[in-house]
Each structure stands twice: as C-alpha cells, then as structure tokens.
Length: 96
Image (cartoon, rainbow, N blue to C red; front, side, top):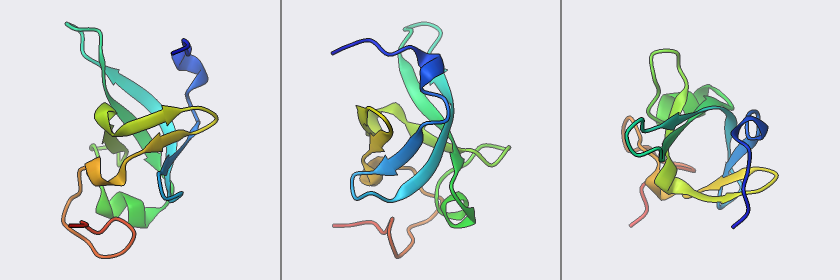
C-alpha cells in the first residue's frame, strides 16, 4: 500500500460503499501512544446525516477508522460500522 500525506486527505468526500455522501473529511484522530489512526472527524453533508450519526460537541460526525475501506479520490466507508445516535430507517437503517 502506498503512502498518503494526511494534509492531502482534508476536504475529501466521505461516501458509503453504496455511494451515499456522509460529508467531507475535516480532521483525523490519532492515538498518542500507538500512533494509529482511530477516527475521522467529518463535516456532515446535511442535517439528516448530523441527526443520524454520532457527533462531537461541534456537530462533526465521528467515523471510526475501522469503517474505512479505501482512501482514493474520496474515502469509502462501511455504513454498518458507523455509530448512530439511534437506529433510524432509511439509508443508514440497521440491516440484519
């Protein structure tokens, strides 16, 4: 796997495997001790996304790094791994 400079990731679109836009990458959370990326801080694409997914006090969505599938021109994530405020129906409904 090639290397990607973190500053080049900022403002990349975050989408699910199904092509639903989550938002744009704002920042990355790194564990101080291990140096591993633990989460993406994402500016939500709209209020619906903000109301469905877990957000920080500034209203940014928190996407665990284990949800990331690909880092290319945009970041592809697994919607099933996104932490939700509640189980909603629609594009992020819990699928059995």
